[in-house]
Image 1 (cartoon, rainbow, N blue to C red):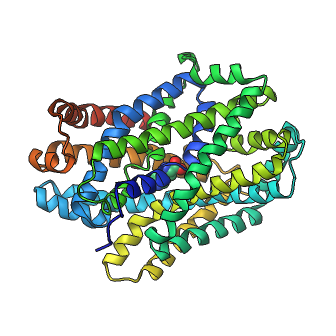
Image 2 (cartoon, rainbow, N blue to C red; image 1 turned 45 degrees about the vertical axis):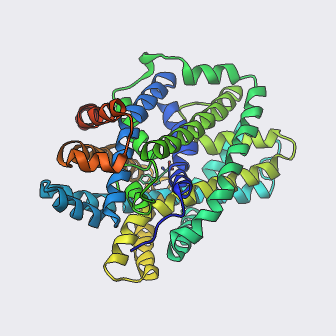
Image 3 (cartoon, helix red, strand yellow; image 1 turned 120 degrees about the vertical axis):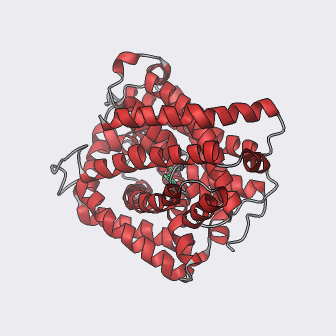
Length: 443
Ligand code: TRP
């Protein structure tokens, strides 16, 4: 009832648009910094391969077979396959997780909007580490400014969703993703000329387990789900619009590889700048906003390049935000609510919740409980608990409760050995690994 993407490539574009976002450019570098670098990167890559890719195939498969919003798809699939009723709750958990994620995602995306303006005004030309850090603290210190940018980003997101994913997004993603790639390469070129490049490279790729802390593996797993948009129904919703003939394996691999490349390149840009300017790799959520302006400040025509770059980050975040809201909106539409009204309701609710994140960086910055600020807790709850739990459920459902023949019909992997490997990973490795890490995370 929602229509189908024009081709396999449209799905790849939309799914890549969903996957590549703040997670790659903002979150991956800062959590890598907080978790000591190389060993963390290796764990993250292992999580992508052993849990991310197999689960993503399963999630897209479910969506394509169910052809509805995740909530209805899971209800339908649970009945069709005679699986325990609890699996029907998966769609619901995803919708709730979507609200949580969208609420803080929009606030951070708002920072990138603010940086487009700062760049365009030339605030950073010739700026060093101090100027860059001060500008960032000033922004975070003003709740009204943050609220304004958050509101603008949420409105932008709602605007595209209300128009339907196809027309709103497809065209912009087609143009912007390649541009983002080129810009990242330009910045990588700059990073290569900085004195800290070797140290930055080393930081990212030298395997030093002593720098890991007890929650590093939980964060790595959570991030591999976050960055691939897994475990809460976004990929299921997009899979529902995927043409029936397209190869699942190739499609999913393409998305995963592109997503991983963007994250690694972002790290290779940011850490050399960190070390060249005597900054802290463990600076936290502000890392990207305090390092990149220095690079732009040093480049010829840096203000211009910087403006374009942050615009592209905005677009990357935009195409991700839409996929976070899509499951809830699609469900409302199936319930007979108009797309416009559904969009408004979903965005308004997420906007309201977002105020908690806005305040986490200033007025309520000292209010810490469990994992830290309100924002820290929301991030932990979604990335490290809800999404992995959703991932386990998806792996178990497709691995154990779906008829093998139906699974084979959907994936159509011609190579039998490859199919068996995937099934084995899905049945045993992914759920056990996720559960182990999950339990560890609770402790
Ligand atoms: N993957 C996106 C990023 O890395 C964020 C995102 C989009 C997401 N859709 C999602 C995260 C669904 C969790 C669930 O920025």
